[in-house]
Amino acid sequence: MTHNTIDGLPPLREVIKTHDLRAKKSLGQNFLLDLNLTSKIARQAGDLSGCDVLEIGPGPGGLTRALLFEGARKVVAIEQDARCLPALAEVTAHHNGKLIVLQGDALAIDPTKYLTGPIRIIANLPYNVGTELLTRWLSPTQWPPFWQSLTLMFQKEVAQRIVAKPGSKAYGRLSILCQWRCTATLKMEIPPAAFTPPPKVTSAVVHLERREQPAFPADAKTLNQTVAKAFGQRRKMLRASLKGLHPQIEDCLIEAGIKPTQRAEEISLEQFCTLSRIIKGTA
Ligand code: SAM
Image (cartoon, rainbow, N blue to C red; front, side, top):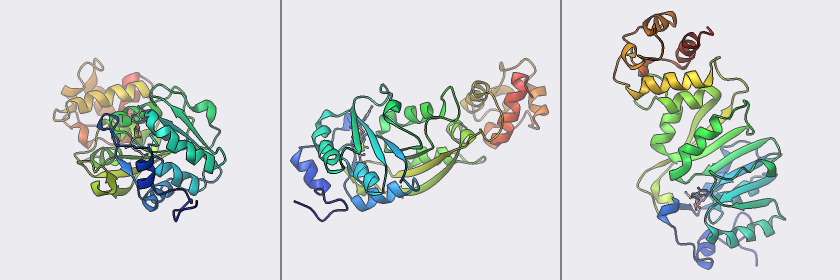
């Protein structure tokens, strides 16, 4: 039987009912059941034709179906909850095997052998593992990484931190980590009512397109240490918060064009990179 949905498969409310997929809080399960909305999210990643997509946490398959409908060459999806597998198997059958589901914890599974470039990562992430996955995707040993872009749903507050610029409260470690190696854009907000069950907070979709080279040269480890210390005590002046990073930290700051009395929030990505090169002795 074909249904009046984008792909002819049953509506998601029916899928949830048939497979008894009551949302589990412990797995961060807030499902999107409107295929028009999931298609809109899929389109934020750009043209999917000719791309393999890695999805984390497909759940009942709302975003997964949209990714296939929007033309992804293949979707590899990692889902921890075994209850979702029969529903996802129906999607795999309907799309002639273009969906591969790996069951387990996304933090423990390496999906790369199932994927060929160009690869886009697109997910309505489980909030409990979202920032950990993002940090890992942005900190591989080799750059450029295996993926081309990340299109991810987060709590709005996390999304704002990812795209924040100097001078704003949201500007911090995550902004530097993301913007050093990617361009980051906030694409759309999604209200709690769009989810089943509705979460307490508003969500937002961010799109990160990798830079082939980081925005400014720097050693990843030194930059990370500098930024961690600077924002670890964000109300303090840098000459105090960065103490211990270098014996002549005030001289390093001045050489980087930063006043030792400035605070982390005022320092641009370029200045942090310059400072970390001076600290490392590679300026
Ligand atoms: N993509 C679906 C949607 O948009 O309706 C579901 C999103 S729901 C916010 C997060 C999904 O991630 C759930 O299906 C949950 O079971 C799954 N999940 C939670 N922790 C996970 C983990 N560590 N690895 C893989 N999947 C996980």
